[in-house]
Length: 328
Image 1: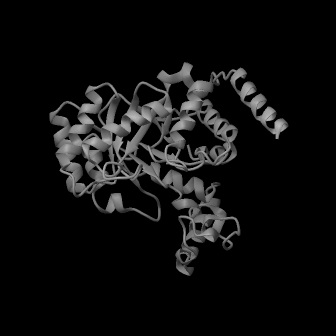
Image 2 (image 1 turned 90 degrees about the horizontal axis):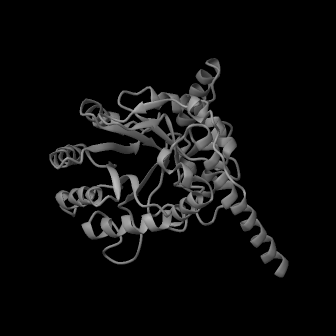
Image 3 (image 1 turned 45 degrees about the vertical axis):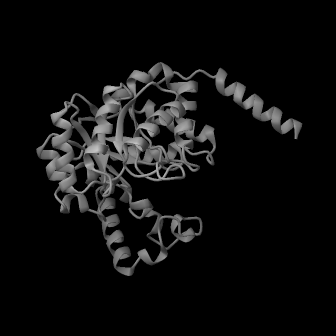
């Protein structure tokens, strides 16, 4: 037991001693797009911390992936208060990364966080009340060890809280210097229109809308959200671009034993119908003819849609991230 503690202590000491120097050519390896009618340029591929950066993950793997991302021009790190697991631990990982590697590069990073889903017990740890959002941003800043976030989102539409309450909280978070920009995620079109008008009238324009968009889920297009964003100077960033791995080669020959689908985690076995499998194989054949992987084709498809600014990818390793970056 003593030696185990000694090894952990030495690892932490070495981690602190090793100085990270970012790649001098990092901005030559990424393409950037203007986010709506703003001065913000986002990388075509951004790094999401939803999975793989929590307290149950190996920190050095998280660190290696984050370093690789930044070294390749991925300057946007996307988080939320309850990313982990456990809740809050992804932001704690971000705070550790700031201390170990990224504090000298803070002004080159575009860090976002969100609040809207369940975070703590009781009536004030969920949804879109002013009390929840104001408490959440303070907690997030402490966990990430930063003075402000570049972007703060309402993580989901709250049908029970007045929209004006949620939106005014976002306005006040910016005016208090805790965020530079605001965004919303997964709001219906009519609520998006209200948010756009309300925020613009208070000189805190809506920077960006985040939603699920991929080749299997095109709801933001079908519902008119992408067109509204494109027509009104609002950026759009897609999450779950590979449909939790369905839009990769992972399930083309069945369900691997170690896959999310085999464990029933986020994907259920009954989702992989014969019709879907045939469609995936067809898309994979098209990708191969173009010299791509299915994942590259899926990511590129999103980036080719009108109104899209960036695509959020998750990565369990730098090797997986490197594959995703090939879509650029």
